[in-house]
Every structure is written in C-alpha cells, then in structure tokens.
Figure 1 (cartoon, one colour):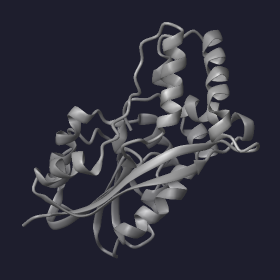
Figure 2 (cartoon, rainbow, N blue to C red):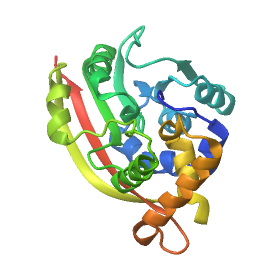
Figure 3 (cartoon, rainbow, N blue to C red):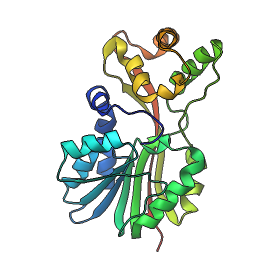
Length: 254
C-alpha cells in the first residue's frame, strides 16, 4: 500500500479490524477451487490466506516491502510480490482481482492506471471485487486534524482518495469493465486501544498529516484533536471511527 510508512507488527496488533471487516468482501468474491486471484494491496496477507483456503491460486501484491516481508513470514506457502498496481503486469490472466482497504491510498489521478491494470489482468468475463474508503470516509477525523493543524499554521489535506459511486462508476466502465454492484455505506468502526485508540489510528494511518510537525507539537495536536472529537466519537471506553466504505463488483466485458 503506497503513501504511508507502515509498521506491519503494529498494523496486525492494533488494527486487526481491517482484515476482520474484509472477511465479508472475501465472501462477496466467493473464490472457487482452481481459480486464479490477484489480491491488490494485500498488506500482511491475512485475506490472501483466506482466499487461498478456498482452493484458489492467489497472488498478493503490495507496494510496501515491510508488509510483503511480514506476509511471506506468516504464509510461506503463498506467493507475495512487492509491486505497485499502477504498473503491475500479470504474467497470465486472473479469474478475479480482489482488493480490500487499499485503493484509497492511491491518488485519484492515478486510478485510471489502476483500472487499466485490473482490466488487463482479468481473463474474459473475469471479475473485480473491491472495497475501499468512499465519499465522506473518516470525515470527522480528517476535518478535526486539518482544523487543528491549520490553527497552528500548517497547510495540510488528507492523503486519501474517497470517491462517490457517481464519480467512480464511469471510471470503472471506461476501462472495459461493467459495474454489476456498488454500495456506499456507513460502517462505524470501533478502534482497539481504549483511550489511546484514536491516536494509535492516526499514528498508523495518518502520518502524512505530520510530515512537517515536530514530535512535541505532534502530541499537543493529537490531544487537541481528541478534545475536538471526544463528544461525538468516544463512548467512554472506545473510540469509534466514522468509516464509510465503497464496495463494488465489476466484470470484464468480452
């Protein structure tokens, strides 16, 4: 997954909700024995392994060398490659391309390259099943971060691409794919770590906000962001992130 500094141990230990929620996307994929599946943005490989358990032949790719190394250690019998989906070339066609919680890390301007890769990788009538952040995803968190940093003289914007269905569907279909299913939905997501859950989440996924911020001021910003969000996102025990997801299924046209 591009666009972030990844700590795979922290990712697995504190943010297991990513692959746990991805189980339902694997169910939507419904991989079959003998199928070839490409897992784009495989991270530490847990969903890749779930797909492989179906009897499918699966290849996991991720732009992060650290994530790929962790996946190879955890699942040595599976195939993982460090690769950027924007420039990836399959050696032979896949029956399906799968992606969970990864595509929003790729800048919006580059998604035509992503979709071109997907279409080129698929066999005739192959399917593309994906879920990623959609319009409005973590808006409360990002608005609070941007407002607090702006008040301190930093000009920042969030690093992700969160499209609507109306924006993304024409892009999908312009690459010879037919959109068969799409849904944008709220998925409030409890964060592990109790009182520290929000700052742990920001530390894992939002480090680009703090590229120009010194460590001592970073802590002050995090405390101020927590104060801004506590009335709406903290229930007294657990932080709940305001996730919105875009889920889709498309097939390659013959």
